[in-house]
Length: 415
Ligand SMILES: [Zn+2]
Image (spheres, rainbow, N blue to C red):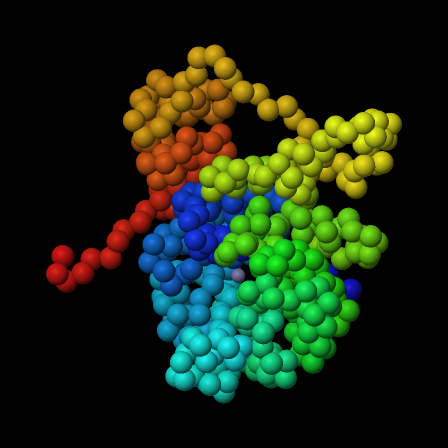
């Protein structure tokens, strides 16, 4: 029976978004939290981009060490041999999504006559062949702007993908142009004709990213293939954002038509929703809106007379799901007295105090001093007070953290 899997793209689409971004350590925390949440795959960066290389290789070391397991970490690059080649040269990435535009409006508007429909097919085929020949484990071929592409051409593109060894085809509603009815029809046909598993990548320009993702995934399932929905934590992403991770999981698992079908990857652990949503809000510096699905302050709040009375009698009167399912319910303790914090200018005593409170112990003073120095650098790197989660990670995997934070700009001849 085909299933619906989640591929989170926060560390790719999310961080490439205008005005927002994450430090490499924060990207790593997101990968770890996605893994704890049972998310199938994290599209974790750009392996052909210089400043991503140390972070990418260090995170792939965490995979080797079994820290990031079973999540798949996949890179994103353009469907060009040179991008795949460079990705393989400078990182140990094993899984890739390669992307190229497929709508006439983009082919004409972006390539300005340098590429036609056939050139796009050739470019995709060459990049796929190269990736296959050089040992890439899973390859997704991304059809950028699929929702505005000619349907017959999109199917032809999908068949080329299949012939040249793509494992999945990503249907990108790049501009959020589809509605649930149109995407259902298009993906059903595409999946029927190609029999390739379909990734559904939707944007929220018309406020329908989650609805379209669910409809698109259902279409793939109805055509007999697996569906992989692309999400971002807290719905970040280009312009109006991507499909929100928690909303998508809830929509697939709790909505009237979808819930009884039980299509969601059973590894998903919704109880980590609260943790990842709050962490991402902190790391991006974007507050969670009061009415955000599942994790907003009002998601389980009732005030008006009829609602409060009904919810008190039986929460099911006004709630579709329980807050505990999302990992909510613990009180948040805020210390209002004396506090010792640590950061880029912190010293050994304050630092020991912070780690003592986390009940993290060091073998000896030498180890403590080394971790202190690293925590200072981590604060230089994130420019925000380090969270307990980050401090624990720094103490546990100091060598990896050092690599993650290493960014060396290229040296030029004239330097
Ligand atoms: Zn996108």
